[in-house]
Amino acid sequence: MARTMWTRLVAVVGAVVAAAALPACVPLSSFNALVASDSHEMTTAAYGASKRQQLDVYVPRETAQRVRPAAGWPLVVFFYGGSWKYGERAHYRFVGEALAARGVMAVIPDYRLYPEVRYPDFLKDNAAATAWSLREAARLGADRKRVFVMGHSAGGYNAAMLALDARWLGAESIQPTQLAGWIGLAGPYDSLPVENPDAKPVFLHPNTPPDSQPIRYVSATVPRTFLAAAPDDPLINPERNTKQMASRLQQAGIAVTLQIYPGASHTTLIGAFAFPLRFLAPVLDDVVEFVNGAPR
Image 1 (cartoon, rainbow, N blue to C red):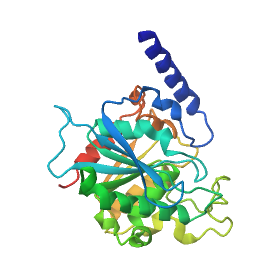
Image 2 (cartoon, helix red, strand yellow):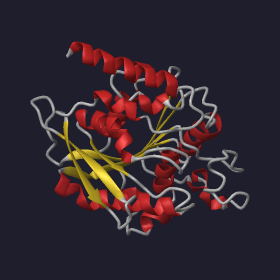
Image 3 (tube, rainbow, N blue to C red):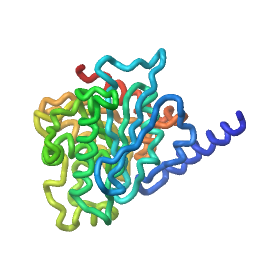
Image 4 (cartoon, rainbow, N blue to C red):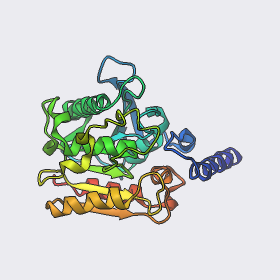
């Protein structure tokens, strides 16, 4: 048994080393090799009619040390990255388990990707998955007043648009102010003109709508914000995106937590949710602290 565990550990660490050199944000399902099964219960549900409109729910399992709050668990809806072209929710079990093990319910939806859809249809899916989470929160054992959206890379963009631009949740009869906060990990918030070749057809290049950029929607009504990035990210410039977004929000009077993790890369920023990769950056600890700091 010890030898098997060691083999799996080596495989996961090897995957992280390889992932750091990848040219795009891709699913890293090898991170799931050490996911614990006793920290949570996982269920699957549909939030729409498409095969891509399904989600997994990771419900924390109560223990002597992990007791459900009277109002219910906080809940995070996590959108993965992949240039709006790649990704599957099953690849991110390690994120769902990591949050559930810390007493945070996690919802990880799939959403339609290019070439099936282009901007803005994937945002409609994200909004529908978030609306489902809010509607079902009490039944699932979550606190409807402490629901967050979180995303990494392209998923960070998705989370930002839901939290800042009221069109998407508004179509589901929800306002961004009903969120307890949003969490963006290395997201692109100001990317015109679009330079990523994978993203160009997604955003109708060269006719990308100016209203597609989250930075345009900064206002005094944006929910509490957690923003994180790697300092030398060659894929999504942290100065233009994460730091600029933080500055604009702070100027608007929004409470912002900004973290730049020197030990992380674009990919390992989310990889650091996986055991035993948390030495790369304390992003999981910081996200959970942010979530638990929400008003009850």
